[in-house]
Image 1 (tube, rainbow, N blue to C red):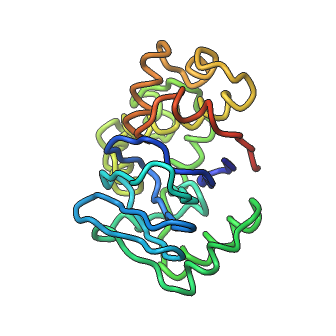
Image 2 (cartoon, rainbow, N blue to C red):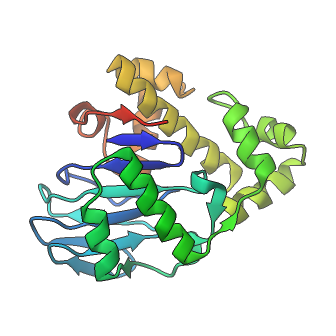
Image 3 (cartoon, rainbow, N blue to C red):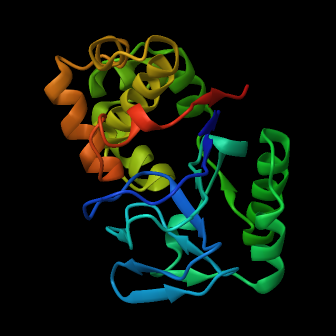
Length: 230
């Protein structure tokens, strides 16, 4: 896994995963085998085809063992939003899928995402929120984030829903999971990762990881080599 600011590239075989959703848009590319995405409707990908799974879409990937590179993009990348207005699963064009298959590095991934977002004409998220989210510590509360942005908690929730598609609480949980994953790259300890993400304990971290990615730390992170790209 390559993890950058607002994006991640997970190049691995599909493991056992439960129905889940996350704050990032997911672009999945089928390589050696056909695979299926179960969401609001079922979509089958032949080798070489790719699909956009919009943020907050509950989905599941099958079968286990399929070779399926996945790009995750959230509004932190380029400070843009609006892909979440896509309706359901969206099959990418052949040209987009072919270009995605050529991604080999963090720089390749960023360039592909930039081109994809530019074609989608995404709009900017609130710069105050973007700045505040980079400053606050793990485990921050919705009221602390609202204070950092300089708005009321009610207005903060409205901005989070508009720019990220989820309430403030869910946005902060997403940040916690990201920070915990970064920490796991250094410590390889679930307990240390949970603490770095501001979770109360390992069980809390595990619940959030299952909620956002459909896997537990032992089934997911423990089997992945993580590279932080900044």
